[in-house]
Amino acid sequence: MKKIVVCLAFVSILAASCTKVLDSLTTFTFSRTTTFTIPASTGLGVPLNINTPDVVTNFESEFSTNNANTDRVEYIKLTSMNLEVTNPTGGNLDFLKSIQLSISADGLSDKIIASKSDVPDGLSLLDLDVEDEDLKPYIIKDTYKLKVEAVTDQIITQDYDLSTTSAFEVKANVL
Image 1 (cartoon, one colour):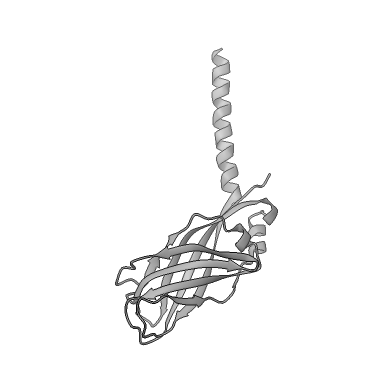
Image 2 (tube, one colour; image 1 turned 90 degrees about the vertical axis):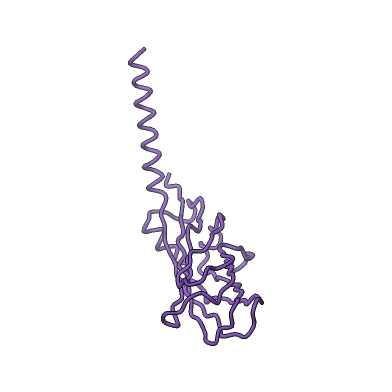
């Protein structure tokens, strides 16, 4: 009886280890950067809508590098997104009251993916709050766009170039 209990314990440990190994082999991350400009303005508290250029997903090379294909992808989730001032040099996000980013792709409705309300002063790099959404239908397209809705609380006299860096987690089934 004691041998059976020991064998069952060993099998349980082995199964748990295999599950962890399989999970690590089937989950990977990749990132994309998008840039856009918030133009100089005179309006305050009014949402400003900006469309970014197309973001090429290049998912096929990302997936093949990680031995996955779209048929086996269970989900793709945004795990982090930050916003950074790239121009003017030394600029910060003090002018920004709130920001919301949505993803769009051909044939799919817009989906909010990240936002930040009450942006703190003094930052040139801001981590956004991300939504827990499956973005697979958007990312397996050839391209997607980000739609930015920004509300300012200061008049800005020059254009601000911003970039977003998005990290995505892909869970794929290799079996």
